[in-house]
Image (tube, rainbow, N blue to C red):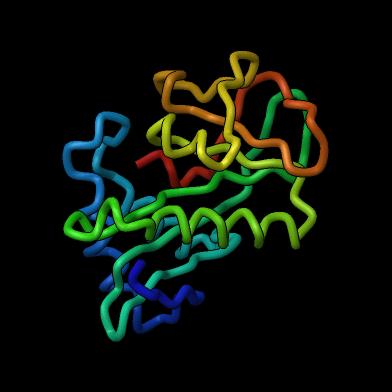
Amino acid sequence: MNSFTIRREAEADIPAIRDLTSRAFVDKPYSRQREAAIVERLRDADALTFSFMAVKGASLVGHIAASAVKISDGTGNWFGVGPISVAPERQGEGIGSLLMQRALQELREMGAAGAVSVGDPTFLGRFDFVDAPDLRLPGMDPQYFRALPLADTTLPTGTVWYHDAFVV
């Protein structure tokens, strides 16, 4: 596999992240092509828990973000992982997997109780994200919404609300 460096974003990276994120979601059935705006709105609201980039040399090839979510049953300390963006010409090279591994490592180090994500169920399943029929994300086809308990094996129940930045 090619070697990539994963690092936190810097202010100078913002235009490249916007471009990459816009290109990464074209033709994805779970996307409404609003991911770039979501990341920017999270950043502007100081609601990004973290934002990591995958770079090869001077080129940005991937990006992942996370932000806190609220769950209607009162369960706390859960986070939404995503958007996860990989340059279309680099998809299938393991970049998204490296970014997800780094994001989950960060969440575990933070003591997060769990994570939810929207995306390809096969990809998310590789990281032990599971279908959570008692956990709903309004307006999202449930086949693309997955959960991963980190602190214990109990999945919350109810409705998940992402930050208002996701309402674009």
